[in-house]
Image (tube, rainbow, N blue to C red):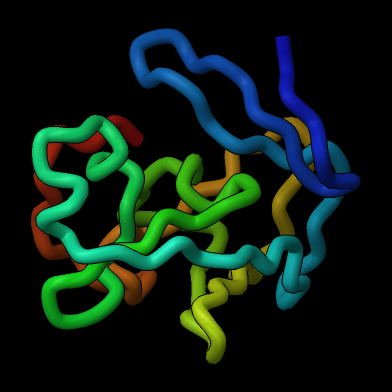
Length: 125
């Protein structure tokens, strides 16, 4: 089963990994393929909640939940996409290289695609 709300993207289940976001069609390098609003709240408000697993650091003591597919991209140390924070609590996702149809779209959770700092879980590339 796949969830579809974008001409570019769909969500699929990945054995051993959960869900992931995949390209439905070719996403050329440099394409802004998703811009999403953020729900920003104090981190304390999500402590003990599964939602914290899907939140981005947003500022001192705050986190943001990205709407759309924004909180469903999986992490990679070799990502094919990256995100940028925009004014008015929005986030933009851009292709770092051509992303082929059927390929999983991944981002580096550290923000910088080249940042190799450890994350809080075991990475499955």
